[in-house]
Image 1 (cartoon, rainbow, N blue to C red):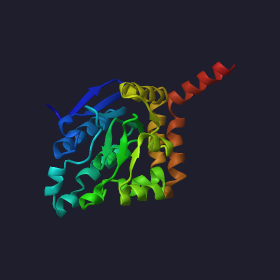
Image 2: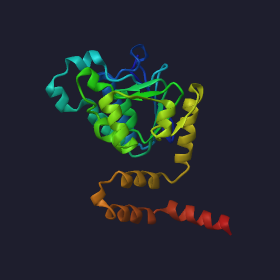
Image 3: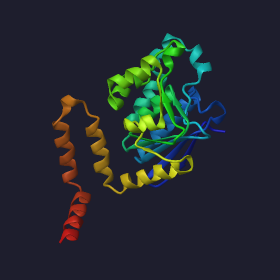
Image 4: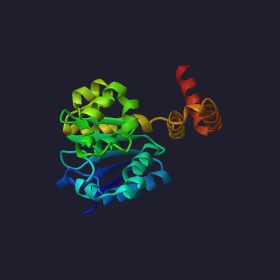
Length: 243
């Protein structure tokens, strides 16, 4: 059995973390499979829906492997490089979180553009309790998502957010029942894919561009879009509907 199930669609792809026997803990083999999946959607950009098999999204990194890693493994950035790659995928990504999203599982969710949960969702970073830090993005990305005071409570005091708390601070975009989770992801994907694909790609790229690159990157991206046939077609259709 593969540790990652990939379900291909024309304008989207579903990635299923498939290690339910260990609550979808992220090990080296799963990291390798996710890199392969990233390469495919970099080559053919599509919306990504990311979920976990069973009743857990991902309970963290595989502790048995993590315990044996040394300083050279840390410097290789095994998880951090993968999660940054996911963060930079050309089209939006949606994490579908049922049950626990802890440690590396939470950091994987933070790397996505959207997060939808269920009432059972629990999100947090308990790494300091294991003698390490959240080094795959949470130490800096979480503050951008929820603000510094709450991020510090999660990272330094081990607070685990309930679904209700995560939704209140918009860490979760929506909370639905478990049986509706994948459908909710597809509804969001439908809204995304109804828009101009290249405009969506460039908007995401401009959104994540370094602040010093603005407004130049905005103008260049807009210049590209101004020359597309789709821009002319969509604006013409808009004007015809209005008239």
